[in-house]
Image 1: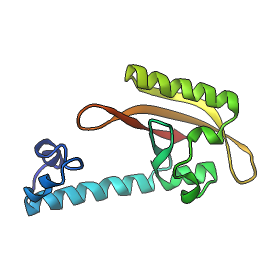
Image 2: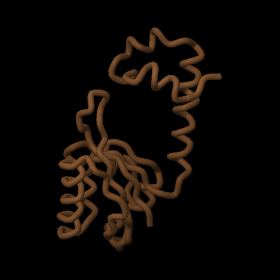
Image 3: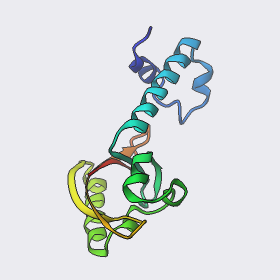
Length: 149
């Protein structure tokens, strides 16, 4: 069986070019599906919250752990700015961190702050990481990261 990285080396822009899929072998497609399922299972089973936001800071993808951490449902979180569940001063500091990642391309790790839990309006200390997300052409498209308690 091929190494799971082989598909990405052969077809790094499958998402941007659907015609590439037509050139894939059945073995390539099976390996890609297995790769996708492996990562889905990881995201579903980790305790940390995983998130992706666009350049405007709106949540575009996240796992169930982020819902549990914030107290918001999936429908409520989708499209919400992560700054909406923070105090104003915290939101300014977190915005500056995201802006720094965007400007430099360097990730931020272990950024600690409090979020406001939707149910009960209590506070929770979190630690987050922020990395720049790029498309196949290298253009910044948003950010990815993890929330830990």
